[in-house]
Length: 59
Image (cartoon, rainbow, N blue to C red; front, side, top):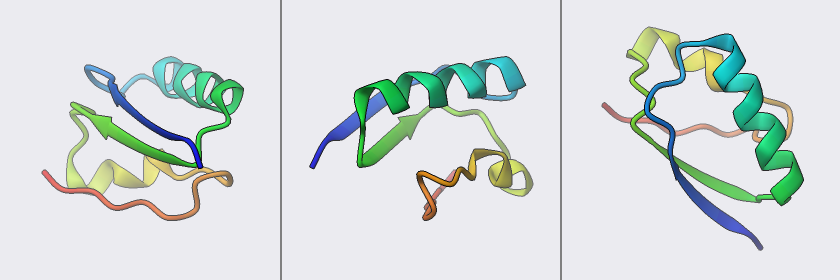
């Protein structure tokens, strides 16, 4: 099992989100902890991805 933790300094940009997923697929990460996403609660759906079906968040 591969765990990864990243400080992303904001994920509001679609380019930054796609770059994040591309990098994580290369790492073959199983569990990811993302810090400083700067997303508000109603925008958390933007992080959904087929490879990571469960997302938990707090603000």
